Length: 273
Length: 282
Figure 1 (tube, each protein chain N blue to C red):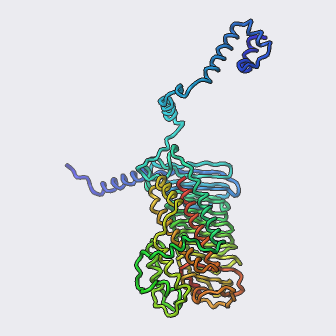
Figure 2 (tube, chains in turn green, orange; figure 1 turned 90 degrees about the vertical axis):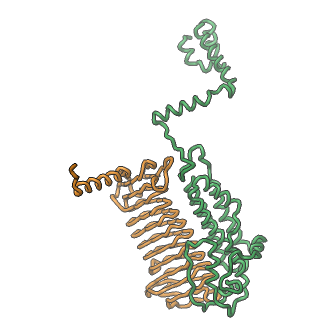
Figure 3 (tube, chains in turn green, yellow; figure 1 turned 60 degrees about the vertical axis):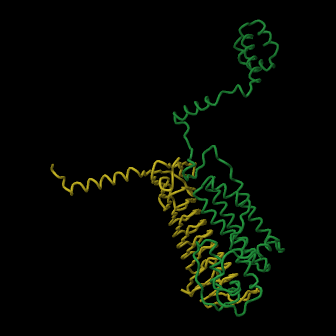
């Protein structure tokens, strides 16, 4: 056994798995035995290193500065003061929760389509008084709209009109006096106008807007307005289905509106992640 | 002191201004060699993307950067090419803007995304996926591909799209389709309007839906389609002489119509929650 042979099997000797031939060489060779003893001491001491023995933060900062100076790494910090949509690496949160939320929204919509029993919450919404004024009508304006197929064409609201003005739009469409209002559609009129008032944002919506605010603050208002509009559409359709549960088109439409909301979530997720 | 003639000063000043603008704007060019059915993806937060067909085995990208507060991250992995605009600290909508002009093989698969846009693609035959928040989307002269468009508020305009599969979804943007035919053509907008001018050809399925946006379809007298229109709270009107078709479902008068023209080769569904639906003859 030579010293060069010992060095090749040092790891085995240090962890105690060396055979008798190696041990015999160590007993005869002071150089190799000294080397093995030092290595065993280092291995033993390293297992007892405490966290307080770790290098201070300035060491890592110094290393990072050196790497930065050499161009190996680049800063990707974004300013909190400026509307930049690329988050800094330190804040690279995983907003993938928005994806399952989007899927959940579509799943809830599917459940509601399959379930014919009205939810108690919808009943409460139906009983709320509309917050918007009722122009040109002494009774809920959608009574006339539902019944009157002979009415003159009404003005069309801008597709970008904020949700609060939809009550006015729908009221204008049905502003003709009712001559033969169908009882069923007449009853539906009140809940729809109630739905035009901003529906309360769910916890998921609040969290969604919070994420957008933190990662893309300039987009917050846009997403909030669109979310409000989509929620109003969902509420309107739910109220309609509650009244006319056999209207398959309405159920299909509700599914599509839920998909619209999921689309909104997905677009935000794609942009802020 | 001798006065400098004005006809010598003005050109110098103009030249200085042009140089200053040119210095602020940076143009970069990228070229890649690709095989058939290349996959090209571009994502820019601020800026336009315009795609046209080029050489059959080459992708060329011209990027115009408005400032040094943004850069282009690009990579090629085999037949896949990806461009992403990367914004630095302090970048805003103007300084972070990067506009792309792209030449791709006609059969390339494209994925374009921009918040501000506009996005445009023309004379292509591959699959196209375009997504914009406020970006206006314009696609024309595309055939044999799957066209998928998504916007939040951006308007969508499709012209001369044939023999493919079209899906448009917008939260509140208007959708305008002229001479768009295919096996499946779907357009949905929550509060935006949908306008279609065409013959509903190719024996396909057409489905246009809105929540409160109006739907207007203008068709020639020789169209061949089976129409089904229903607005839950809005009005429907058909100027086209339809052959009535019986429906087992009952609807309130003025809320729905069913009927065919010609041989009813295509199936057309027009549905809105509270928007108006109008079928007009060209």
